[in-house]
Image (cartoon, rainbow, N blue to C red; front, side):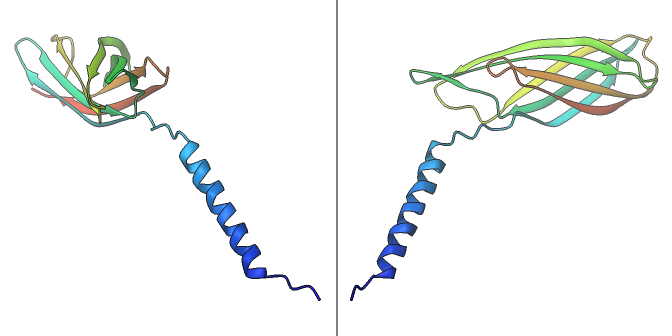
Length: 149
């Protein structure tokens, strides 16, 4: 008569499954999702026209590590949508090319533009378009603001 210890077989199966799950979890390299957040925009009246100030924050970008230095490279453009729906492209642009001994959590993106008296009072939208130059991922965020006398 042959006796099979079922508990021992189950224990080995569970142990093996556990090790497989741990292996895949350790090997997976979950990329953070590129994200823009905390967009703000406001305009001050200056004669004649307005001064527009806008900012947002970005996270989830690729950080290249060389030695003990992390580097980030993000390019951005800023567009403006008028109350009539007309899109004015490229009212601002820039490049964030930063290096640090510590990983970056997030970074600010800021722009400033003077709007002349041809810009009539009303509700406008500012649009930040950001490209992570290392991953080539792109993302945009809009924020509404008002020009008023």
